[in-house]
Image 1 (cartoon, rainbow, N blue to C red):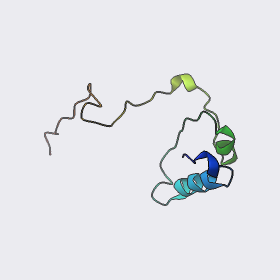
Image 2 (image 1 turned 90 degrees about the vertical axis):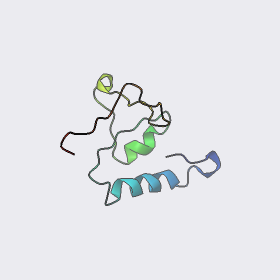
Image 3 (image 1 turned 120 degrees about the vertical axis):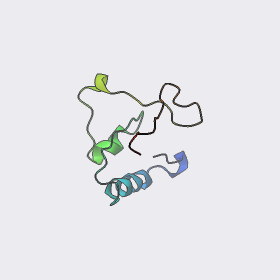
Image 4 (image 1 turned 60 degrees about the vertical axis):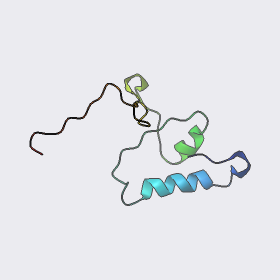
Length: 79
């Protein structure tokens, strides 16, 4: 969620995050996030710091034709 500086402090980010978290098609999707400066926003919405951040890993970018160079998808023989 990004809100341009002149519009911050009006509850826009809170509204957007709540809408995403409560969306019927997304309520069962686990959510983790990374933030540099909005910890208080997410704490207010029930997020908690991760107990073992050293266990977290980030997926590589999935944009562009060469985004996942070490991953190949093979068609199932049953397909």
